[in-house]
Structure formats: C-alpha cells, structure tokens
Image (cartoon, rainbow, N blue to C red; front, top):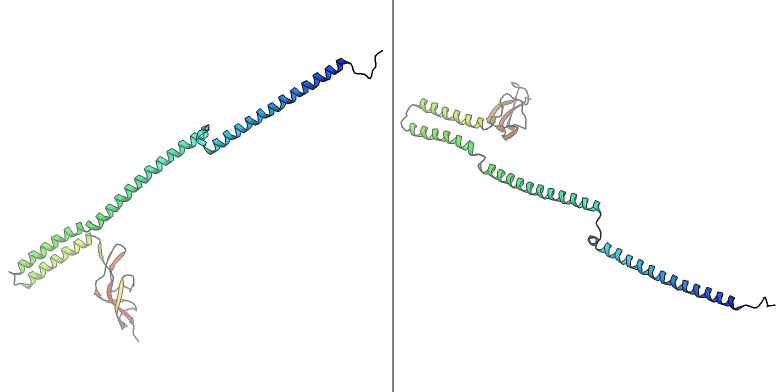
Length: 211
C-alpha cells in the first residue's frame, strides 16, 4: 500500500512543467511589454516631429480650403492696393494740374478785355471828345464784368440792406433817425463772393440810433 503523503514522480513532473510554462509566459509577457513601449516611444517621437514641422505631416482637406481662400483674398488685396495707389497718383496729378491751370479759361477771356483796353488806348490818342472816351471805357468795363460773372463772381448787396457781419465790414457808423438802426446807408467799397464763399466783404457805413 502506497503512502498517500508521499509525492510520486508524476506529480513532480507536472509541477515542473507548470513552472516552466509559467516562466516562459512571464518572459513572453515582458518581451511584449518592451515591444509595446518601443512602439509608443516611436509614435511619440513622430507626433513631436509632426508638431514641429506641420508641413511634413498629412494635410487636412479643410486646411487646404482655408489656404485657397487666404490666397484668393490676399491676391484681391494686392490688386486693390495697386488700384488705390494708381487712383491716388491720378488724383494728385489732377489736383496739381487744376492748381496750375485752373485759371486758364478765365485768363483767356480776360485777354479779350485786355485787347479792348489796348485798342482804346490807341484810339484815345486821336480822340478829343471825352464822351467817346467815356463810352469806350463803359463798354470795356461792362465786358469785364460779364466775363467775371460767367466765372462765378457775384456782387454783395450792401446799400439799404441790414448789416450782416458775414458779408459786410463796418468802417463807419453814423447816428441818424432817417434810417432804421443797423441799416447800411453807404457802400464805400464793393464786396464780392463766389457761391457761398466771400471773396471780399463790402466796406460800409452803418446807421446807428441817434441820441
């Protein structure tokens, strides 16, 4: 009869096989962990490289669309900037030309008046009649006034008007009961304007209340 507490050789073999299998499994597990660690380390390095050099990594289609929109808007901006620069240069040239030649038309018309003054001066050498001289002077003066009016010149109303500091300059004040107070009773020098702009205020004598 065998002893139940005594191990037989078969049990020892089984335990030895189990231990060997466990050891081998442990080695495989450790190798697998090392392999996974290497793979993760490799991925981390690739991700870091991609972050440092985005152009080296795969491009998102959405990024491509944004780049195209950016390029389109940038080209439009460049064209607009060039167009605006050309417009600015044209405006500067036109302003310079206007300042330089703006009075050309009015001067051409005034040349006709000047010609008439020259003709009148020559004619006066042979004329003794003062009335004819006066008539010639009035014609030339009227021609000059017409030229200036066509250019936009306007006389400022003064005599009989109420004093307006925007258009009149009071150089005299006369106490009187013959005119309402602040009425212009005499124009000492004509005033002129062009549109809403006063070129020269009229010099006037203004009535004040008599004491």
